[in-house]
Length: 393
Ligand SMILES: [Fe+2]
Image (cartoon, rainbow, N blue to C red; front, side, top):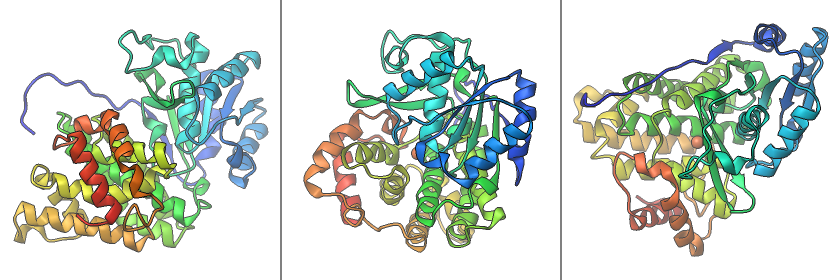
């Protein structure tokens, strides 16, 4: 990108990574002065061996804790507000977010309410009179159990407003975890289809942030490495779930994707958010199907970046012009989707054609496409949805 204007950026989260990293949790809490953590997770994860291994680490160190599991798949403002009340009632002094994107987002938002008071709607980033998140916010430690969202290192939460029927974005550097504990052993039981969906979410984050037209060369470099890792390890993580190498590097790829999208995302995410809202389509699955379609739409503008994607797939890009390399990259992303069991069209994923106009309307209201490399009108979004529906682009 051309150098013009002033930009600010930072990468402040401490990361503890590796098989068995969860054993470091009591020491981390001690370092942060947290005596009674409030563990936020989803009800499904609470019964798993992975969750038991996390709390047994705390119990072995004599750490008392509370557990909160009233978190919906797309967390509701009511989940967050109720959780903040329980945090205060239980006398907790720090938040540990355990799980995928939903409990992470709920936990980070809950920490704001626990520290500053108020309700989720007060902190709606799209409101002109948004209440600033200036602290104090209790210490947050994140423990991801999927590899996709990257919420463990992100500064935002996406919370569903139950009264307004839309997503509220809460964003602040104060919402970033002080520590992210990335333990690949906690991810080995993730089923193949969720590994594929969440992994493609990570790849989409890396690709969309690389092409977002915002000056952030550190994010760009991180995105390129995140793409390389997803390309190298996603298929193996799907097909050989106990591989600590594949699981570990997908955790890193997901984290890098979220660091990179400090820059922002693109049109695949606007389509995906709207598809999830209208059809309940899993976020990563929706991204996976939309990504090659959006890349095809962007290819003239983003051919330089897509050539790097092609290179990550092992294509010898020195023998071709950038547009040809971009087209190879699009074909490789579609081929990866196929190899890991992702449907080739929205139709195959269960979407019906009659609601695509509604999806386009919602996608247009979503802010992610504002930072797509090529601008989109509402009609463009509809056309892209039709292409994704048919799997033809
Ligand atoms: Fe995403």
